[in-house]
Amino acid sequence: MHLLVINGPNLNLLGIREPDIYGRGTYNDLCRRISAHAEACGATVEFFQSNHEGAIVDRIQEAYQVVDGIIINPAAYTHTSVAILDALKAVAIPCVEVHISDVDAREAFRKVSYVALVAEKRFAGYGFDGYLMAMDYLIETYHS
Ligand code: DQA
Image 1 (cartoon, rainbow, N blue to C red):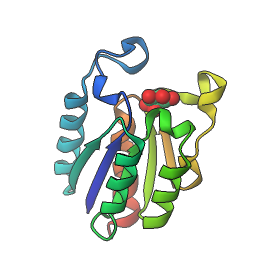
Image 2 (tube, helix red, strand yellow):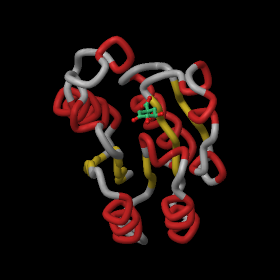
Image 3 (cartoon, rainbow, N blue to C red):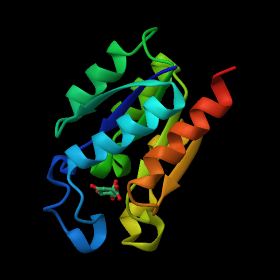
């Protein structure tokens, strides 16, 4: 199973940004953990991080008929982006939403998620583990 992990704006600053909320692990630490888990599960994984909404839309479109599952943390675009929602609907690739923090326990505006309208599942508030949980879900559901 070939998976694409997409991370949205400011997640390149993991380890620096608000460590009390997002932890001290860096973006590279996150990618290393996901890669190790994928290898253990017999899956392959590629990563994409961007601070730009259109770049994320482009990357989702490129995944059409190439990728078997998408794990996405759209970060702030979760709460605003119809374009990312529409791109995920357009390619119809099974998709899981991940948030490092428990978005439902934070400011009211973080309770709104456009991506939730297309994502099959959401893991929020589990730190980096949420990405691994998303991977397990996709493998269990789609790797027969
Ligand atoms: C986040 C939560 C979002 O509300 C926030 O804008 C982020 C990160 C998370 O992983 O907890 O940038 O998606």
